[in-house]
Image 1: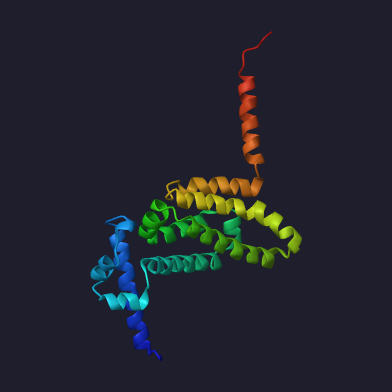
Image 2 (image 1 turned 60 degrees about the horizontal axis):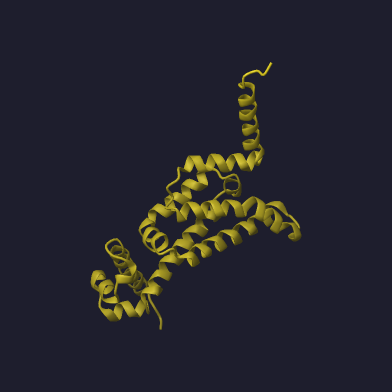
Length: 209
């Protein structure tokens, strides 16, 4: 079947109405309580229109997930690799803004229902993108790539994952300060501070002589 640009626009608008209706319903009731009838009624379309675009509620969710992953790809493609590797605020702020724009979906589908498989998709997408970037930037032999990636990248992905799953409640500045310290000085920056504190405590002990 041949579609004109006008047809494509109409299809896109119908899908957008259905997705927005689903997200609107998520703000009012649990995901498990939402029915297909609820969605097409809220979207002000008939049942056949909904099924023309989506075979199930799961397909609506998959469409939203794919949209989120595309935004994530765009964010990574347009971010300086060093911003990610150094845990800088610019990357975290951009990630935070992306999540906030889709917070209804994140909060209801991801946080409440613990969609671990979706978080794993995010992990995989970030990992693959950054491995490619590391290859291009460093020219490391493949046999060393997993070592460098695990040390330099996987830890940051784990931090971002925990931050997302926790509802992005931690302060961005605090997270980035810790990550930047680890990135620039490793754990020595924390160990040296602890040693200084221990030395100060020792110096303040009363003399035994």
